[in-house]
Length: 473
Image (tube, rainbow, N blue to C red; front, side, top):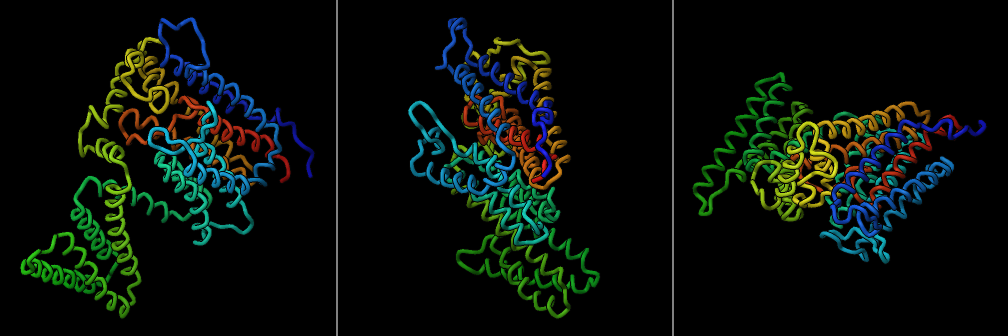
């Protein structure tokens, strides 16, 4: 084994400086949110900025401990930590305290602990451990299923709390899978499902299914050189659809357009399967599966949206998609946030001078909507500085990921990038009304001990394994 390297000499100080700058900016903005002239000369750990400062001090201690621990610890204990994490996620559902409608917290005296925040870096570790296993390849369907299971098992428990925002973060880890060899077709399918999800919410189901049918016929037309076979399929579908339409006129209750369309697809698909078998049309099977899977997804989206998502979540999505307007209800936070950011102009109103901040027009201003404080007090210029710091951090993480000499380190580094990228884009996106409000913090900036400590551990494990990259594993 090679001699141990000087960890301090190999530490990436750029990423640490960026981390410290973001934490400092977070604290001064939390201080600004609470500031008032009557208590300007006092300081108390009972205040949010006081508690955040205390958590920052502990975060520095945690960072030091993470860097001191041998880097092999994180690889060898990935599975035990993952199992312990699942135990905590199950336990919080049973004995956790409900806060803001979510049973996500353990409360011990005055201390609150949110296990879902720490689950992110532990999932990143176990994913790195699994993907770096000998003879593991994401070209294998079994490996893909197992990797997806590792990602979504904790996400499902978090969704049950319910904490939709934190559970959606895990979808970002598909970036890692793609980097490690996940076939592009799966990424295309995932992107298509996202588009189909939005279309299903915006348009009537009949319109969406009709669009899917049209795409299927276009695919078949271009893939099938024997146009006579395509014409046969189109005629079969048309005759069945016409017959069902006539039947709908005869039946007392009638048949809806969606039912006629779906039945036409199913019946004609079964009939045409015989022709496909005779003429060995392999692509027709893929197209039929595409249509069937898409229709099932459309109706599952409708069910999930109406029966699983809460009323406030449905309204937030509808507001973002322009389906409904609710400036005094579910759209209030975003509306006030945009007013605050817009009022900052180019240079902002100045530190401690934000009127939207001072008069509490924006709820959750020190947590999920902390970015609107930046926009109001520091303006476009200050917002650009903060965004630039995050982008520099993300690019530095990518740089570190690509210089790793072993797969475990690289996979973990890409997991760090994916998690930070998701939080960064979604949090800022929801404060300016580009994405639904799902309640996730802006890393290192938003108020919260569990969030700060979890992101600190996430970053400093990367710092540690990067500093030890020249050692033999």
